[in-house]
Length: 373
Ligand code: G3I
Image 1 (spheres, rainbow, N blue to C red):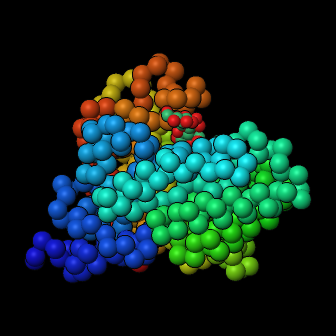
Image 2: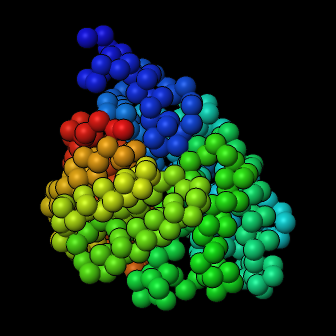
């Protein structure tokens, strides 16, 4: 079989083009991955899926090691923070797209896809915003922001996390008590999607949330509420195309029930939605210090979750929240860093860029995946 033909008999370019449709990459002429070292994106592409990572434009600009790792492993980028409101809109009505534009240029230079993250969230907001959210202004402020950012990146960003983290099982009706909910009620969700679709009709629009993977009463509630939101959006004809599952996993913390997660994925797919893992990392803060033990437990949990996820034909791909342990948000917060002070080993590459057991588990999961539809 020619190197460009893959198991499914389709050419690699066809598969990569298929990635576009699934992960909202549009009709990009995706890179011929054959020319690149067999990174995780090559493994993902075998069943028509994408592998991506969160990035920071300063790292891509100034750090050749990071740049080379990203180009070797990924074919989809997402800004870790540079398209968030607090970075883009430091004062009302002004926009600084510098960081996001740098990422868009890098993605285009390396013929990679680009995800936008995130248009409407209750965090990473500029300090001037809360005061402006009197009811009569809130709708205009939200719609103006979403329209300006989605229009700026139209044709460069193929999919957006339009609304991020609206669910809170302890909130009224299971919604987070955010400043958006207080200003606009739950209408802020369809308003955001409608504004994004109007500004960029080609982008694939996602709802994104966390703690949807494991077997706890709280995550049962989170899955049920997420499904309820998506069902209502679809029933009301709101332009939503996919669910982003953040998959910030925690080794040694919660039980995992593959059947429960598979049934949730199937119910989301039944709404004719694509599903993307959007921010995967595996915290090892609860595990004993020895690295080999931590690496094995991290790889085992990720392998289980990805085996379930990639058995779902509407699973479009996996994005990790960073590639190498040298840079993970998990070391930045007291609530997330290890109590012994050791750096976390949560990502596919170690601090020197070496591939870890987690990398192997991800490659195996991609290779064993059901064909993407
Ligand atoms: O703001 C400065 C920027 O001006 C400066 O140029 C840059 C250079 O270092 O740093 C920026 O600082 C911080 C940035 O992370 C980089 O460290 C921001 O102030 C800080 O808010 C930002 O935190 C990000 C956080 O979201 C809030 O946006 C984290 O990196 C990022 O990992 C985290 O990601 C979230 C997802 O968006 C949603 N899901 C949960 C996930 C983890 O919290």
